[in-house]
Length: 350
Image (cartoon, rainbow, N blue to C red; front, side, top):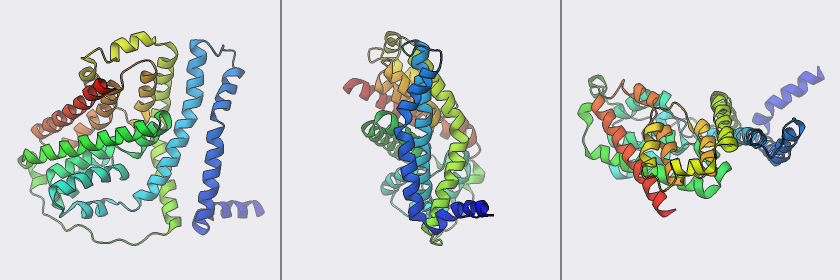
C-alpha cells in the first residue's frame, strides 16, 4: 500500500510541485550527461576489443553518441514541448493572418523553429493557412522552416558542434525559408493550388485560448518527449551506427577528396543525394558529424543536411494532395537554389 502511494505521489509531482520536479529532473539529466565519457570508455574496455583499432574507435563513438544524443534530444524536446503549448495551429494561424507580407514571412519562418509541425502535418496546416487568408509565400516560409530549423536539429547540432554551428545553421535555415517564401510569393502561383483548396471558404483565425498552468505545460513537454523521441530513436541508432562506421573505417583523405572544398561538384551532388533520402535531423546529424570529422567541407555537409530535412521526397508526395506539380517543382527549385548558394558560400569563406 505504501509503495503504491509513493508511486502515485511521484506521478503527481509535476502537477503538485512543478518547480521541484523541474529542478530534480535538471539535476538528474546533468549527472547522466557528465557520466557519458567514462561510461563509454568503460564499455569499450570491458569488450575484447583494442581501443586503438577501427572497431574500438567506432564502438566508442556509438556508445558515447547514442546516449548523448538521446539525452540532448529529451531535454530540448521537453522544453520545446512546453513552449509549443503556446503555439497551437489555431494560434499560429492567428499570428500570421492579417500581417503585411514581409513581416509575415519573417514571423512565419521564426515560428517554424518553435512549432512541432513536420511533413506529416503539412496538408492540414496548408489548408488551415489558406482558409485563414495567409499569403502563399508566407505559408511556404513556414513549411520550409518548420521541418528544417526545428528543436531536434538545433539540439543535436549544439551538442555535437557547439553553439556557433547551431546558430549558424539556424541563421541559414531562416534565411532560406524567408527568401524562398518571398520569391514564391512574388511569382503569384495561387492558380497552381489544387482547385478544391483554392476554392475553400475563408475562416476567421481563432482569437484566444484557455491559459495552461505550469504543471499542464510540464505534462505537454513530457507528452512531446514520448511522441517525438519515441518516433525518432530508431533513426538515431541508424544514423549513429553509420556515423560510427564512417568514423572508424573511412579514410580521411578519401572523404576530403569526395566532399572537400576542391571538388566544386560536391555541393550539387550533396543536394541531389539528399533530396530523395527519407530521414530527419535525428538520423542525418550523426552522419554529418562523422563526415566533418573525416575532412568533408562544412558547406557541402550543410547542403546535404538541409536538402535531406527540407526537401524530403515523402513531404513532396504529401504536398501533392494540395499543390499542382508546377508549384511543387517551383518550391523545390527555389529551396534547392538557396541551399546550393549556402553550400558554395561557406565552402568559399571557411
